[in-house]
Image (tube, rainbow, N blue to C red; front, side, top):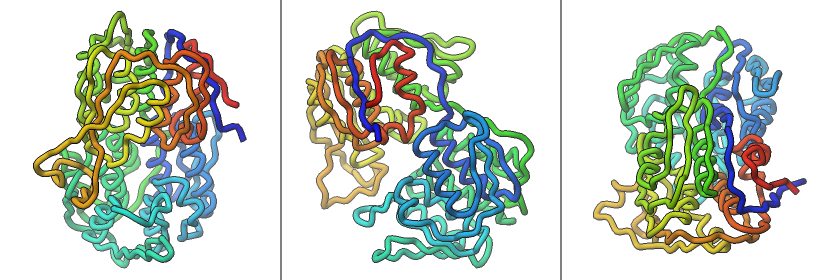
Length: 440
């Protein structure tokens, strides 16, 4: 199987990018479609590895999901006949845990493996389990098998406040509540636009979900009703990746169908670099005219600077004049790309980052007995050169491809199937901007 990119970098890239549908909406609306009692049609669904894996998973449970057009997916949930998600399928895609909602409504009991198959270390999923239990769902975990068992003897009702906002937790709690027939109040919820798109889809189908900032009120209904094909929003993470790529090469890009409010915190940082952007009728135009300025970035939950953006931002800052900093607050292991970027000549160092109350400051489950590396400095501008790179996670993988395309010479990137979990037609889209890249 082809799983490498051959990149000849150093070209100035420019052109137009047509964004794909948002990965972080596609996966959730596909799962939510299993709550219906009829066929559902979804549009603008990207053909990425995560979507294909999820389709294979729900088909293995008896449902039928198939692309009827290039980015139009038809889902028929009526054949759902299994309440056990296999370890094989569950380990391939982390959103598999969200199948708990439709499986509980169909069977009252289900068995789902720990997402990603990981059974050690701090599990942020514990916060989601606490929420489910607070609404009356019984959940237990077997560390020997790696499976959660969930049981719903009565429909969820009540109030739950997240200790810390969680994107996936908010979405799962919404799904478990919409057919409850009772009122559910969720507090301190995540506010990402992808969640709002899921809410819009569900409300158009008869759900009663109201958001007031970080508070969400749900009045449970008896059923959802499909009315017309639903087209999901475009992927802001893809947009940021290609902005960093083109600006890093000294180029320019117009991104079609991109709304400024969904990347507002990114634009705020981009202004500090001296790059140019222009909001137009159907999208946003970005250009780099001269040297970029260094910045200090701290990731946060929405509406802050998104953690998924910081690996690509780090690559862009290798081309900025001065000393840049990035502080990662959302995940504990988001700097896996640093050692790989150093292979291309990047000047990046880890710094000690001390804060008075780390348990409150960080959004992950902070362990005072562990040593964390949550801050880096980047010295630029640094000419990047060619190298051999290996991708270990999705967003870090995109940053390695960006760095190889900016750097001079021929590079090899291994394990690109990980990048393709979240990027549709990455090779074709970068080629359209003038890049020299092919899959081997």
